[in-house]
Image (tube, rainbow, N blue to C red; front, side, top):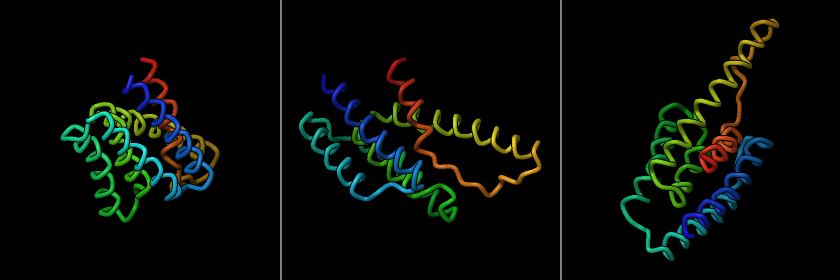
Length: 144
């Protein structure tokens, strides 16, 4: 039961963050704050605050570090999303979400690039929000 509650609340957080990222290419601080507070309360109520949660949050910390080192080639919001998702998901599931999201994003971006190449348009500098790609990945991970 607690795992289901975590997945439902995380799903709502993901949908909100993906919606904001897709529309504005940014996620509001209030959404991260609300998700963080809810995730921390859930973890405390479930007595599940420990190494596993910390390890899962480290996925996001790694993204924040990469973002800082690359001049935000990867958005800070994406890193913070995975820090907070670590409060809801086990490390393995959080890492799967990231890897499969990168894979799906790469396929779509590669398709956009090829489309532009075939039609004489340059899409090299186009930025694509990442979080919307996590929605179908999350649905796949939850169903499978």
